[in-house]
Image (cartoon, rainbow, N blue to C red; front, side):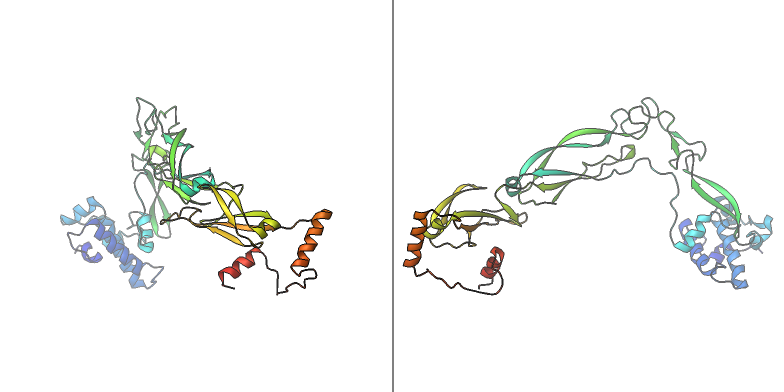
Length: 379
């Protein structure tokens, strides 16, 4: 009595090829001799190999559906298995059964996505604060203008590979511990593409792309900082075969400013004034990012004090408003005095009762940043 190969795999007679393959993989994982060495299991393993050999081959499946047994010439369903391996149509089916993943078959596409590219852009502090527009020169791969990405010389085209007949892979039957196993590998003549280009394009040598320098306009948003990357979708490298372009990333590098130092969205600078100006008070002109402003130094200002100018810093990249401009005051003590100046200072010290000051001692060293920290902590 002929073997019912559908029943062996546990599928219906109208099962699709995908359902047949899934059933075979499931049973192969359970019954493979390396997993289950029991002799009865090995016989069962041979049966599912024979069943899959018949049902996965359209011609053999048709013979079986018409009432025949395509393996009867080899001694029946079990005999056709030939050890452990003759029933396997392709070695990748064994791998699929154990790793649960179908191998990619068929020709590879010559068209692939291009790589992303990145360039560095130097900008000034005021450009980072308020935003700007820049023209940049980009040297990337573009679609070949001669062959339009096809890779073939004008008037010619790619042809089907005569070695693999367009499949992109060639098969080879070898003997192993599984018996006869058919393995597949990329076609050495077409490199797996399924087609060959007899006459490559002279401009791009068959790659479908050439290098070119072009100019792009980049909008720099207000508030960018060192390391900020701006993505320009589709402006990167065109892929092989004229494939879609990758993205271009513009990395911001902020140039140092002669006066201001940036910390986050705040700006900091230091103004040095003489002792007399700190004592009596004065006004100092400062060229801010918004224009010239007068900094009011109040009488009795101490070295290390800071004067905030609100909303004079960097625009917040996300959200409204701006940071502040912090002006740090440094009082300059004269190192040398002439006789008249020294006499005046001694008289002033006598008037203020400071001829022999004892000083005020405290732990540590109060530098500029220590005083700033104490001010924020309310000390």
